[in-house]
Each structure stands twice: as structure tokens, then as C-alpha cells.
Image (cartoon, rainbow, N blue to C red; front, side, top):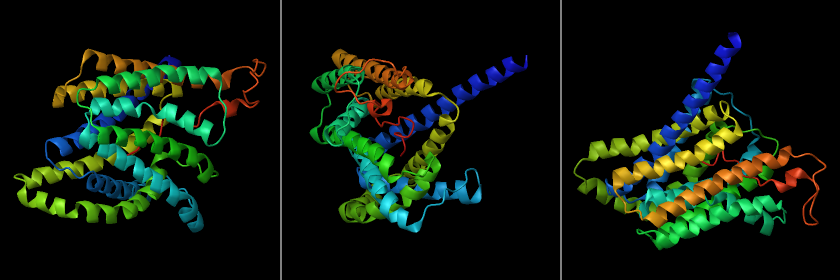
Length: 340
């Protein structure tokens, strides 16, 4: 009886964790698109800067005031030598994501973002000379094929938005790979990561946002008909962006890697469907097929990546396969790639 109750509670906690993570993730995406399209606030640098400010304040409150999570101490020298470069890439990643939302539909942006596993593997192979099992490469084929099909058949294709989303994948991959070396020795969770990186990201982005978008923001303030409600929505998106980071911290401790991978791909499908219902962007049958193929490929990739480290040491190796099983596994951490 006791075991049954414990099992039921574990299942309930996992479902609730995934649901709240879905809710915050999709809400941030939809609200950002609403800000750019419906409010006509076409300033992605400013929106990103507001997100970083809200996340900085939120992380400070959670760690130093509410004491929900203990602060991981970092030496002052390491903050500039290790965390600042990570913050720079983190900043570029978020900005490119918001720029892509400014120009292309949510469905297209989310599909391109699913290309991140492929860019991570390719970067590690080309730059760091890592070799991977053939099954890793095979699992990337449907991802690449789905992205190509989606891009060719996208009815609202925009070159700038497409490039921003694609380079955002590269930035995400670079951030993940650099974290393995720059943050070695520090076991950061999502809250401590935001605590240290968001202030740096704010400092990096504040001046460019002011110089490039300051005049446009002032003009928007003077001409927008419903300033108070628009301001609440913009600030609300920043608050939700921090809540998304907190939800990632909770879902990591409540689900397995396989469950998270499947839930993540279903989340993309849900975001695509909801955005289509709200913004009515045209989606052709071939475009929907490309998105579906990409999501199936991501699920298959996650399954292969999960299975490889669990194989027996006696598994035959090809001449190009490294001796260490860890060398064959890409450095993609799907559980932290959604931080905003």
C-alpha cells in the first residue's frame, strides 16, 4: 500500500513538473511573439534585456531572500574568466532566439531550434575532433531532412529570421560545449546559472539595446494607444522567462532523461499547434510533415544517446570509434537548453 502511494505520488509529481514546464515555456514563446506582432514592439534586444533584468532579480530573490536554493560560491577571478564568456554566448543565444521570433512564425522557429543536436555533434566533430558512433550520425538524418523540408515549404519564410534561428542553434551548441570546460568543477543548477549569467548578460546587452533601439522604443512609447497594458505584458514576459528557469530546476529533479526528451518534443508540437491557433500563420501539409519528421528524429536521437552509455564494454568498435564510451556521446544537455 505504501509503495503504491509512493509510486502514485512520483507519477503525479512528474506529470505536474512537465505540465508547469510546458506552460511556462510555451507562454514565454507565445508572449514574445505577441509582443513583436500584436503590440508592434519590434525591439528584440530590449525584450531580451528586460528578460535578463527580471531573471537577475528573480534569481537573487530565490537564492538570497527565499533561500529556496543554496548559492554556489564562485571565486571572483572565475566569474570573469569562466562565467563571463559563457554569459556572452548565453546572451547571443537568447537575442538570436528573439530576433528569429520577430521575423518568422513560432512553428518555423521551433522546428529550426530542433536542429541543435545536429549542430552540437557537427561542432564537436569539426572543431574538437571528437568521433561518434554511427548510430548518432544516423539519428541526425531525419532531423536534418525534416529541417530542410520545413524550410523549403515554409510559406512565411524570412532570410533574416531563418539565419537568426540557425545561428541560435550554433550559439546553443557552443554554450553547451563551453560549459563542459569553462564550468568544470562547478555543479550549477538552472537557478545558480541564471544568478551568475543574467547580470553579465544584462551588462553586455544594455548598451547595444540603448544605442540601436533606444530611439525606436521612445517613439513606440509616444505612439502606442494602450501603454499600461502593453507594458504589463512586456514585463510579464520577463517574469515568465525567469519562472521558466525555475520550472527547469523542478522538472530536472522530477523526471528521467528519457521522459524529459519525449516531453520536450511534445512541447514543441504543442507550441506549434497553439501558435497556429493564435496567430493563424499559414502551414502547408508538407511543412507540417517536415516538422513532424524533425520531432520524430529528435526523439530517436534522444533514445540513441540514452542507450549508448548503457551498452556493455564488450560491444564491437569500428576503427574510427574512440575507446571511451563517453567520447561517443555528444555534449548536449537538453534539460538546460530552454533557459531564457
